[in-house]
Amino acid sequence: KEHIAQVEKFEATSKEDLEAFRIKYLGKKGILNDFFAEFRNVPNEMKKEFGQTINALKTKAETKVADIREALENKEEDKGVYGDLTRPAEPINLGSRHPISLVKNQIIEIFANVGFNVSEGPEIEDDWHNFTALNLPEYHPARDMQDTFFIQTNPDVLLRTHTSSVQVRYMEKNQPPIRTISPGRVFRNEAISARSHCIFHQVEGLYIDKDVSFADLKQTLLYFTKEMFGKSKIRLRPSYFPFTEPSAEVDIYWGLNNEIDYRITKGTGWLEIMGCGMVDPNVLENCGIDSKEYSGFAFGMGIERIAMLLYQIGDIRMFYENDVRFLEQFKSVL
Ligand code: PHE
Image (tube, rainbow, N blue to C red; front, side, top):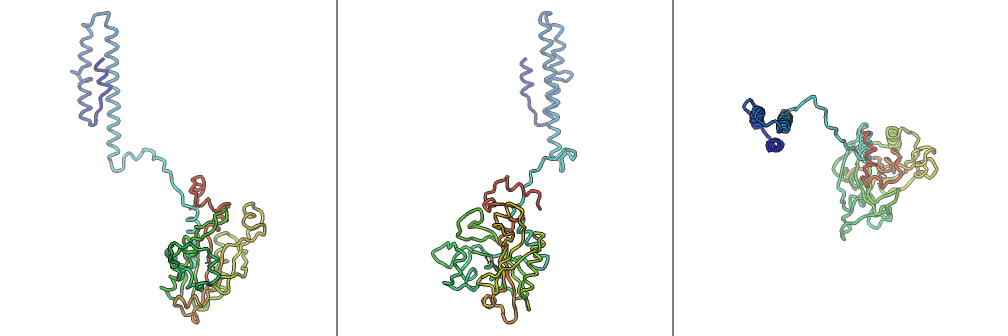
């Protein structure tokens, strides 16, 4: 019985240890054979119990040897370069891209296909790149259009309110022809609701060359809405931006048969998707581009808004809550 306890406790980390154990109990001159030989000398009334006990010891020792041998063999396989190639793979739980990234990448690709590159810039900006160069001098009333987060008492340091600031930086460093889009995170001091947030994402576009006209702008936008939404009915409403002249708001006709559309369109069927216009000559000059030689157009859209339309998302706050039940729904989208 003491041996049974010892067998149960036995562990081996090498084949050699295991073999020594096997010989000790199950070998020709091993403990078990000694016991079996002893059987003859056991008094009759004890034969039954003695027999059962040595049989139990034998089974235990055999199982132990088999188990440890298998474990050691598995371990050896793992050590090989590829292990056992026939073993089924562990299931891999894949993550998914965030819908903002998905839509951003899609927009980048659509414009890359017609020759736009991607430009990026800092989220913490100075007054010049976010406002002044864009034809918004100090005390210009249009500065109120974008409630700004200032992050120091020095009003020259702020969080960019749009990625137009990146376009300014790009023009300062590059001469036309320019075709660039600027995706990025922007910040506005706005109340958080289902429709707006104080942090969101934009893609702005800039096209500057000789003889660029409003017709080029319209055709580029039409190309974009067709590629992005598969819809080609758009309209341009006159609007105002300090950095473009003339300026327009772009609406897309989405139809009237969906509950979420009603929430965004307020029942008209037309959805505003972006702002655009011909770059104001003052802006070109501010950035070192000769406005007599060159002209161009610019546009800007919110990625969240495009994503909400595309995926029928009713509340902008869902993008920032990181609820996996929301995020997992984009697993199949590449
Ligand atoms: N910068 C504008 C905004 O953030 C969008 C825009 C870009 C409008 C370019 C016209 C031209 O609202």
